[in-house]
Length: 313
Image 1 (cartoon, rainbow, N blue to C red):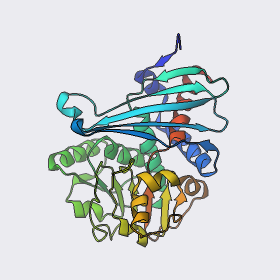
Image 2: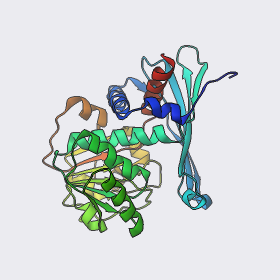
Image 3: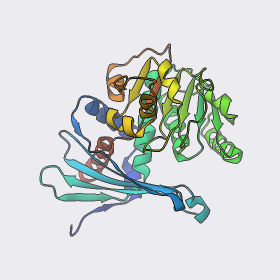
């Protein structure tokens, strides 16, 4: 471990542009759909008194020079202390020797970007280019989902809902600064858009199936560990396409797992996100749901791509 390079967030930002991240995430998700990855079960720690959580994920994409172990934390009340909510780091080690290659002190940003890229890619694949978007959530990931989707195609309008109206207004203002037509909205209005993105830490559904009845597509990114739940289970029964980034994780961590346990859908009713990205176009005329829980192999791929830019390997 002596002399282990530490890659700072400024160094990462200098090379991790949206094109690099989007292309890398797409390739990693396709590799995962084709069983060309290794992804052990993630580990979670919950800190209820501090309103925080920690995720430990690891993964490897066949042929990559590195495997990666990631520690990512979110403490939702940190803003009261003047601190960022997200933090994290990734340890990349040689897939040939096992020797540590570098520590990426990425402050949770690579995790945030790979989640935003995954959401943007699958939302773009399963929705029409003129879809109006509703976002439920007002945190960093809610903003990034819209921002990254807008790099793939124009968004006619964005309705923003949050439990705190001032937070919804603030996010709508931030999106308008990016040149988007965005406004705060009531929950039912946001949930009734053509395309709905849920990005919260909710432990219970954000509405009834009726509330989402007008939606043609839902991308759910918030339910990434046991105990979280955003999309009502009954809605999955009406979906023509159910996409998961990882089948096993979605059964134990995601909204899809809630739907299976409720008897709304069969345990094998989903298809891999990577298969959809590989085989586009898909039917956009009926309801589709993408349940994203975060895949360790995608973390590994993004970290490896950054190191490839910085270390030339």
